[in-house]
Image (tube, rainbow, N blue to C red):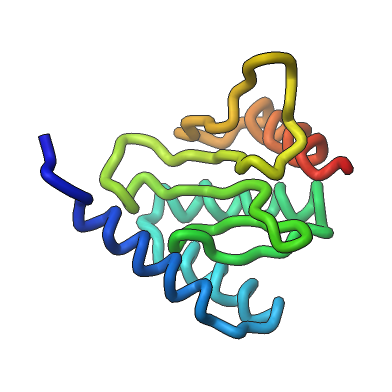
Length: 137
């Protein structure tokens, strides 16, 4: 058991603090997000690239921007969804998730985070459907 935050968690918190201080244009945020994707391990990078393509095709109104040092997509300044590389926290799978601003409510309980280990046509379809639903006002 750890007595505090891991080295990776501390790095993510530093990244989030730096992101809040930046006065980037939307284009600079998008470029930074793509740089983050390109810096990932190959397996994570392949998934992150495809997630990025799917999200931007499904909801072009979302603004790509890093969030805790990982790719995320915002609407009206609020995080809607994000990708977390497995290498970020040295875990066995990537995560594609949704934040509280996403419109995914479905009764008293619904999933907001998904382990992502491979990109299949069914996975692509599900990501697309969920992103479309998440951005509906």
